[in-house]
Amino acid sequence: MKILALDCSAGPASAAVLSDGNIIASSFVNVKLTHSQTLLPMVKNTLDSAMLTLDDIDAFAINNGPGSFTGIRIGISAVKGLATPRNKPCTEVSTLESIAYLFKNTDCIVCAVMDARCNQVYNALFRVEDTKVTRLCEDRAVLADEVIKELDLVDEKVIIAGDGAGLFEEFIKGKTNILIAQEPLRYQNACGVALAAKEKVVLGNTVSADLLSPFYLRLPQAERELKAKREQGE
Image 1: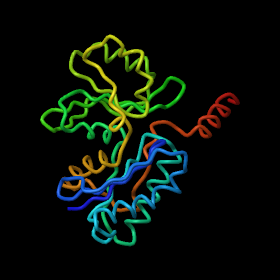
Image 2 (image 1 turned 120 degrees about the vertical axis):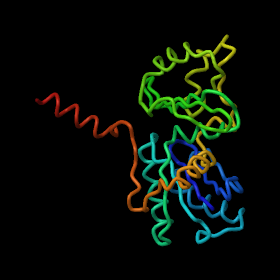
Image 3 (image 1 turned 180 degrees about the horizontal axis):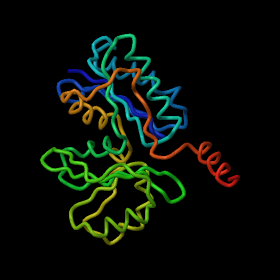
């Protein structure tokens, strides 16, 4: 089974190909270019590196949120464009879950955090044990301070990962059981998407490309502002 996975849920963008359970090619960029400029060239380069074509791919996977509203839309649109003509199944992966899968070989608690601004983070906790990833809570948008209070109660090894990890640097000072992931694994990456998608595809948790949809956790800013104005006018 070959899976092509994509992620452009935040600043970085990446693509990865998984074959028979192993990542055989991947690309990652973290530059100030829009994902509409970088994503499809990365797909081509990754497939070329794996000596494959799109017709060789059995399933497509995408981080469908939480994350950047624009980035998520671009990623989903790209997968729809690639999968629809080939009538291939697709899998939606939580961005936070895909972060946890980057630590599949490390027994720990993964605290996946993405910067949601205004001292808020998109967050979920996962336990990784014997290469198995178990979700401990649902994806949520919470204050960083609330996550810190939860981590204060944990005496196991904790790895904080995701583009919001830097918000916790002051908090972890002096704590021996909590660390922030190193740069190569800190950011969301399509390798994690592919590893998470593999289990979903095996279980038959796939959808057709036309049913792919974003999972934002909260309304886009424009919709929040419109809602606030309507509430004020009532």
